[in-house]
Image 1 (tube, helix red, strand yellow):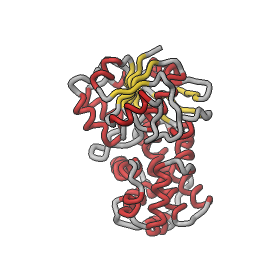
Image 2 (image 1 turned 90 degrees about the vertical axis):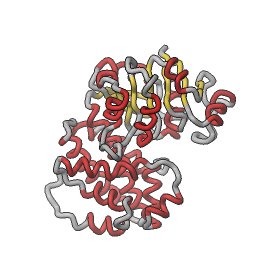
Image 3 (image 1 turned 135 degrees about the horizontal axis):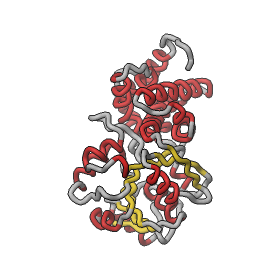
Image 4 (image 1 turned 120 degrees about the vertical axis):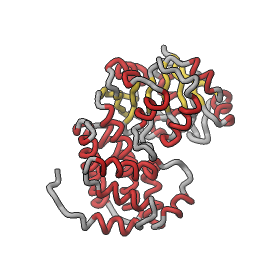
Length: 332
């Protein structure tokens, strides 16, 4: 049994907390919202994020960030990606750098174009050898019901990989190892952008052919981008890549897919923002991923089209029209 601090009391942090309790870990969740924390402790539920779910009584929560970090033997980070830096700056004076830190975050920082583990290294000074990532086709609303699912444990340190596998393995949650941390982080961030493109196509009334086009060509863009930054192209054919992308692009439970649908129907990013108030990572990561592609000369027409739509410079219809005019090269 390990003492695991989960930083984040949203749907994903709470869900992974339950998975770890099921695997035999002692889990303490940190959250800012006093009502959510009180409900986890007293009612053993989190109705704000996971309606109708009874949580394990062993799952505990607190609003005291110092207490949760002092409790920890392992730290799991499950806060919105674009808030990571500001939170780490606040916690820097007492954030331990000698413990394993596992990221669950899928995004690219807007201002710096850093991957999330790069932000952790820069702000807190955590060594890369202590960092890991859990990622894959993991929709919280399904996993919280203990439906069978798989995920990837990624790190450049084999000991961290083995730690993640041990922490999360249950009879419904299967963990596969990967040493390609860069590829897994790129895949997790990019799937949000491609899922937005698929959602826009659905919102405009297009069917499976158009969705298949967006998914496969989007995956090709991401694989070429990741390879340019040292990732293994095969990573994008596994759970962290195509697995996560299919789940996000096809499921109504996906925020990015759902936001894309509203955007496609309304034709306006401002209207979509009014209707969907939850954090939609693809909206933030699109421009950052496009900048990363430009730096290494990788053509990424779908990522570019999504970036322009969320920036408000073109409509979803204009984006699709433009994509259908992109010069055709060999498929692979």
